[in-house]
Image 1 (cartoon, one colour):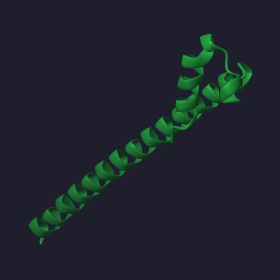
Image 2 (cartoon, rainbow, N blue to C red):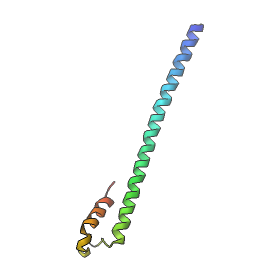
Image 3 (tube, rainbow, N blue to C red):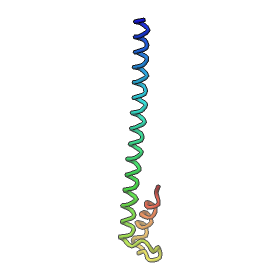
Amino acid sequence: YLRFGFTLFTMGLSVYIIVQFVWTVHHDLEMKAVEYSSEIARQVSECSKSYFENRCDPVAGRLPAMQALCSEWELCMSRD
């Protein structure tokens, strides 16, 4: 019975370690996804601010010198 108890304990401990490892990896990946999404949202907000501060909104009213930057900010704002 002692051998059976030790084997059962060892198997239980092994399962616990494997489950903890999988949960930790899952949690880390989830946190990285949230971090990435937050960074994208920050960049979109920054692009939007620059777009409107530099009066890029009416496309016909853009200054020729700002055309490239306005197009870049517009593209950045449409990111998901």
